[in-house]
Length: 294
Ligand code: ADP
Image: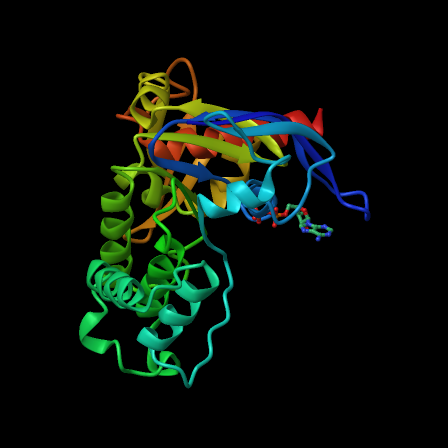
């Protein structure tokens, strides 16, 4: 269990990236969902002990993450948003190198570990290939193998599916789900489907604040009976936006399909639909924007 309490961070340029963030994150996959600029990377880097908050505490079980950084790092696997690799080095050689850095000094043990990791992320067949020839998905899976060295108890992956094609993305998410059975895995993303497909728990973060935390299913249930859909003429969209809480708009065969949040039918022509996590997410972003405007 990872326990985050009252975490705040303001950068020297005055941007308040985290405001009083508190979260309880149990074992398993946890989705941290938020738009660009919400503060996800700041939170991930703080948990990964790469930067300090202005206030707040983080505990992994009994371990004080911010006070005992070196102990935390031994239990941590981190796949950052951007990670550099040496393009001319093979996957196997690079993992060997990372394993040495992580303190796996026994050669036989290290070879075994590297082979097991390459198998786990499905890169064993291409282990001799240079990293520079890897596709985006292969690189991300390599990143996971690297993050798993040392059997971490806490795995952090920051925006991992951006830029992956659908097949690579699915493969990558399946891999995370397998890992998530044993440890805390935090998946930071702006892609709602990443969370709805595989995270039993999640939080929505916007403008540095936790807007909502819980089980996706529960948060969806809370919107039942309040999400309404209709097709409109595209030119009427701004009018609808002014009058209603428009959660989303989508082009559908030439017409514009909108979702509106309302306690009762907004007007005839709207039908009540089963809400999904995207409705929950856009509803929260809407509230955050409204709070800012107020
Ligand atoms: P996300 O990962 O959700 O996109 P970030 O944590 O990267 O969000 O950024 C949150 C806010 O903090 C943004 O407004 C961003 O511009 C700002 N920010 C991030 N890193 C820095 C930094 N090193 N210095 C100043 N501002 C930063």
